[in-house]
Image 1 (cartoon, helix red, strand yellow):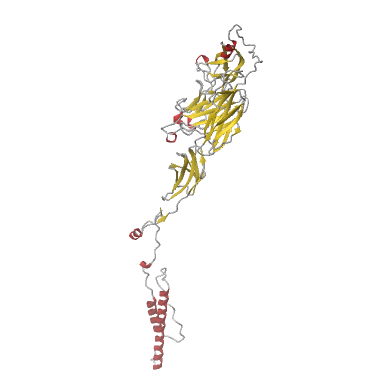
Image 2 (cartoon, rainbow, N blue to C red; image 1 turned 180 degrees about the vertical axis):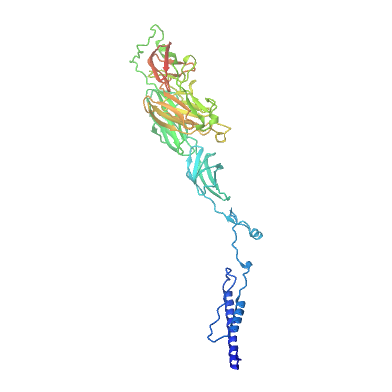
Length: 554
């Protein structure tokens, strides 16, 4: 190898210095770039930047040495595992209506994350309307909610919720204003409320007739009817018979025309709540008979001409007696499953077969084929005593309608436009909902053949509660039927009569009708399901006439 000259030595030194300077500059630039951007942990080393190309020849030994030195200086150390960010694992959510306290969060960095629920649920009463005037204690409150999982109560009565609607039966306790408060509570304990006020009025107007007195007899064809009607609220309708009645501060006075014989004058009133009451009085028009007119008894009536006082004999009248029987096999009784109706345990105390059924025989047979539940009556009686009928009385007792006037619990009589009263005697102390009264709902119908139309339909919610209504029968040959809408096995039937000459047969099927004016009449025997039979009888003064009736299955 030829020895280096001074000029060649100088040139080699310059080249070595340039290479060292370029490597140092590349390292500084690379470190600066690494500090400005986040480290990439996917690789553990960084390649060095290639040195600049130099056209001048470089000795092989010097080039290899500097390249090795550059690689050692450019190598990047392994990444620090502690600096790697980790994704936290979420804790389960907890529903609450209060946020967690700061101390709890600091004490437990991994404390459960709570979802705060402070939204109040809403409840809205839709029925009855605010300020509604009600005439029955039991009111069904309905409305809407916005949370189908929440619990709703109305006046402490748990409501039944179906979807977003609720229903609650509430018993009003006070006459006058009563609050209805609906409360809703959701699962987080948030509460909402809605309230309305309603008014309760179950008291019918009070009616008093000051004149004429009941049983008043007059020869004048008109009579003045006077009295007073009062009510805690407003009387919306007042009538005398079917004519509107004008009140002057509650007082009334009106002239009423009379027909010859008995006249029933019915004064009625209805208040704003729908409560109804009627009171009647009976006036007898006795038109004097002109002197020139001679009253001749019916030619079919045999009177002893030698009797010293023929008129007295005729006035005393005669008596009709007899018996009603049944022939053949009576129809099977009707059977009602008590679990299909309210108050099952209480109503099972009467007429039950011991297997959860109410048994209702519509044809009841007594000893010696005696037929019960029959009304015997006479029509078109001329003269006779005044008909002082005080009204029909029925009691709801043991989930049965019991009828006045005899042993029957199934058949009775009514008089057109006269009053029928129905009293509730049922209460069940063992049932909180019926402790003050078993709810009955007397529904009355006018029945003429296959036609059946409603007369009135009113509730009896409390023990001691009485419904009083006039009997309005518009069709000929119609009867009056009573049925409980709550317990359909409670039924009673009534035939209209027009004079006091009727009787309801006894348990042995016998009957007696006394004081009948002498004459020949049609007498009828009526059974609610077996129909009506008739016979012709002649009644003699101071005598007893017998008549028998026999029914068979239809």
